[in-house]
Image 1 (cartoon, rainbow, N blue to C red):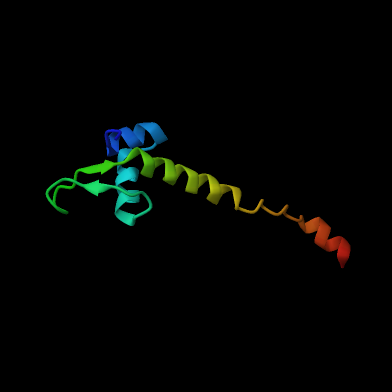
Image 2 (cartoon, one colour; image 1 turned 90 degrees about the horizontal axis):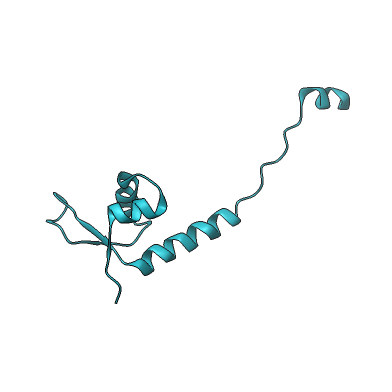
Amino acid sequence: MEPMLTAQEVAEHLRINVDEVRRMLNRGELRGVNVGRGNMKPRWRIEPAALEQFKQRMTIDRSNQRAPRPRKRVKDYLEIL
């Protein structure tokens, strides 16, 4: 079994702020275990498999996004009238 990761290690891996990792944990977007003293002083640990699942979900979510539609200029609308 691989050692669990800290929120700081996950933040470094994802190249984001550790506070954002904690927000994702609190929202349930990233699975982790609170090994601290309840909600007053949480200390999160994340399994490497949970991090990989999170990264896969983010990749799938981004691939499902539609491309932005090209904007029509006012001039194009005036030609129709």
